[in-house]
Length: 78
Image (cartoon, rainbow, N blue to C red; front, side, top):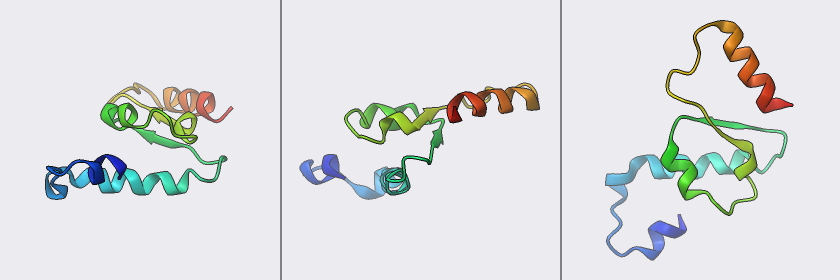
């Protein structure tokens, strides 16, 4: 939100996902929660947030089998 407010040329309609992305940070106020995303740009914009450690990047198609999903989630949650 700060980036948008500081940029006089920012057009919200061109960046509709930015609002959704910022709303997700509210949920991360609870340190027990994790946020999974495939959006590399999202992580680039969140560098100094206390919630950054709870945001995890997943490739668009990283899983070949159900066991892959379980393994990845276990690593994130432990």
